Amino acid sequence: MSSSPSPLHLAVALDGACWHPAAWREPVARPGELLTAAYWADLVTEAEHGLLDFVTIEDGLGLQSSSPAEPDGRTDQVRGRLDAVLIAARIAPLTRHIGVVPTVVTTHTEPFHISKAIATLDYVSTGRAGVRVQVSARQNEAAHFGRRTLPPFRIEDYGTPAGQELVTELFDEAADYVEAVRRLWDSWEDDAEIRDVATGRFIDRDKLHYIDFEGGHFSVKGPSITPRPPQGQPIVSALAHATVPYRLVARAADVGYVTPHDAGQARAVVEEIRAEQAAAGRGEETVHVFGDLVVFLDDTPGAAEARRERLDALAGRPYTSDARIFAGTPAELADLLQELGEAGLSGFRLRPAVAGHDLPAITRSLVPELQRRGVFRRAYEADTLRGLLGLARPANRYATTA
Image 1: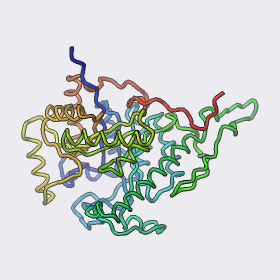
Image 2: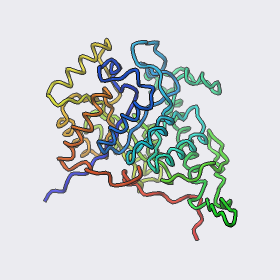
Image 3: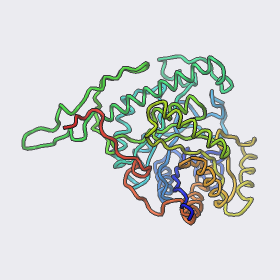
Image 4: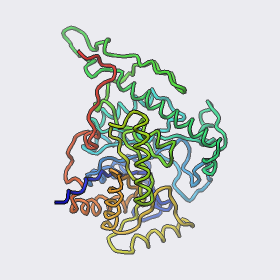
């Protein structure tokens, strides 16, 4: 008797009108509403309708650019965005089950500020918060803050000794950052708040802890000003394309997003992350590896590819991505997800090409197809994001056991 297929996890990555640069010009795009709370509420409500595990919300410290390393000066693509953490805090109370994961750039922000922002999001969402940590090597973003200078860096420089040194430093800093944030989340024990009106004791000071974090990039005293989040530890995630960022995922994250273009690459990436996990002493812990895919979805064969070509013509060039670009039917995408899942990926973060078209196609066509195949949930089975991902609530590292 054959075993039943493994259930898949599904997330979507949201960014303005979404991932094709001409998406904002589509009739369904609502470009005049991209900076409204109602627009974001509609997207996340739609994602929850499809029983998705979570949404991620893109962010950055500079204007969007078609260049990965510098501003581009273009005026024919969406430029300008709202703060991802604040969007997340606004939309979380409008949903009940789906996880909410904003992006935070670690390179120019402080662990203390982000720890309390994400802890607050976990309270606002009643245990459905996460964070996607991201580094920045862009000189124009460093110039906003004036605290550090970064050398010129282009993607072509990645393989050079100087490029590797910079990338390693930025990702080591990100690992320190996550460690400081995680310790701050644990700096209040779960029962530190007494709230006893009769005795006048609101907190037990012995259950608040200095974290005394001293790393290569941060010195953080603690404790936090925000009590321990409902999940104990909100989900930490990161996008990774190569060995140095894979190491960050293995050392510090609960979920890594990777960009394999076929099953062979997926298998190799998962094996590398598992080896790095073991080297970091986390071999027994669950670290999910999600495959990222840009998706153009239409029920009629050939329609998605034709739509992609039409959008490319509007943009004036073929759309390219770090991730595999899929254009086809929901059944064809379901086949691909199952194939990649068998290569070791436990889930997928889908990037809708056009938010108003491809997000509903995911929730209303792809999800039912996966349900028919027995590989996706038919109801939410947990009230927290950790629960949806099958992760236990961790013990507090500072709590003394009786």
